[in-house]
Length: 155
Image (cartoon, rainbow, N blue to C red; front, side):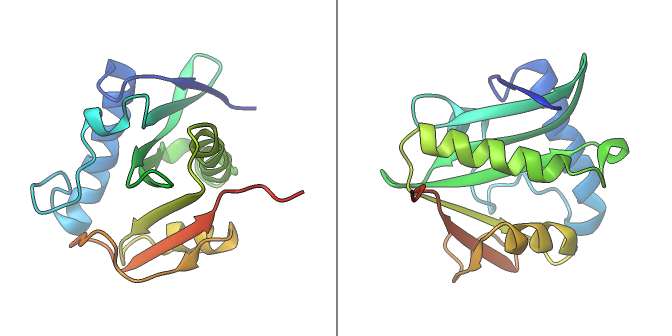
């Protein structure tokens, strides 16, 4: 079972996971933390409008991701990453569920996200978890899929 902690995105543990994600994606897209890309700076994930989660098993951080505000009712999930040795075990799904719950707790009714053409596994996860394809909402030059999901829980 994963334990999630809310950390500043510039905390050394969180920052190392973000840098590992950027390093892994660089051969596929080039650096994704460039001015032309949508902002995903540490400040974007700060409360009260945002949050950054780090998931751990025992003492080892194995995944991370953040929520940033797009509007009063809509958030964006950014910087989702699972370390390679933890993949294929449902960690990404647990992380996505934790991020969606954090979005609900922050009062958002809708979550959006994007992913690129070299990440078909991410697109598959998002579609499987109820994200419906939408039009480009953020002009991300590295994305070819944009998705949206209602976070409101129905009873």
